[in-house]
Structure formats: C-alpha cells, structure tokens
Amino acid sequence: MSRTTVPVESEVAKEASSVAKAQGYSVVKLASDALKLAVELLRRGITPGKAIEMFRLLEKALAFDVVPVPLSYLELVAKKWKMCEDEEVIAFLRETGAKFGKIAVQDFRSFGEFMAVASQFFSLLPVSRLSFSRSGNTWWIVFAGTGEMSVKCLGYFAEEAIRQFGCTVKTTYESNVIVAEVNC
Image 1 (cartoon, rainbow, N blue to C red):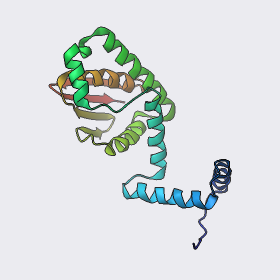
Image 2: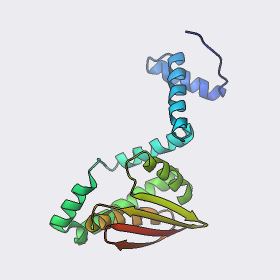
Image 3: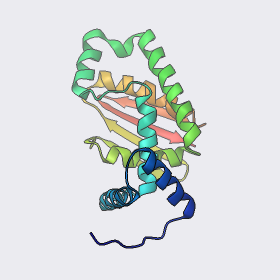
C-alpha cells in the first residue's frame, strides 16, 4: 500500500492518534476510513462538519427513545383511538417537544442553524413529503402525512420544539397537511 502525507491540524492529529490507539485501531486505517467517509458524504452534498451536526441531532432524537414507525401505522393508531384529540396525549406531545427543543437549543445557536442541519438530515430519509423554505426571518415548513389525525400529533410536538428557539409558530392543518409559519 502506498502512503501519502495529508496535512492535518496538530490537535486533531493528536486526538485521532489517541482515540485510535484506545480503540485498537491504527492511525493509518483511521485516516483512510475517515477520508473514505468524507468522500461519500461530499458525494451526497454533505460536508463532514454537517455530518457531525446531523449525528448530534440523531443522538438527541435517540435520547427520546425514538424508533422508526411507518406514518400509516401512526395514522391508524391515531384514528382508531382518537389519540391526537386526547388532552393527555396532546400535553405529553407538547411537553416532549419542549424538552427536545431545549436540548436542541444547547447545540444550535439559532433556529436557522438547526433547520440547516435538520433539512440535510431529512434529505437522507424517504420523507419527500417534507419541505422547507425561508424568506428573511420567516420559515415555512410543509409536511404531508398519511392522514389528518397523525399530522396533528406531529404538529403538537414540533410547535413546542420550535418555540424553544424563541420563535413564534403559526400552524395550520388542512386534511393531512401541516403548514407551519415560523418567525425567528
């Protein structure tokens, strides 16, 4: 295997060497794997720095015991038991959204910074029903769910998470579509 020298900030090199050794990983293998990962991310339009932010966002979501569930299942449950109309469920969703937002605020300096990471994160998921746009201090977030019951549940959670950034949010529900106008 031929080798080449890649300039790296000395503090990064020291930390990489230390972490690699602690994991029983060679520094050369770590550097090669890290560069392969960086190339794959860049091919997808994601800088390694953004990937780190996306990973941190994922860690925050996982702290809430998030599991992937088909939206059609959420709609079935919401419709069958009228969950998104139950005051206890609504209170839980709003409380959980507020907790998530407070945690997100610690890592993201602004709602715009959070949205930049979140939009890249969601672009990797098969969520073609989600769109973001911005004009000045106003964001429009549009999500089309599988049904009108489940979008309300998602909306309650999202509203409170957004408010933690000091933003105001006006949410409208039309059938299975949420439109959130966010001003920060």
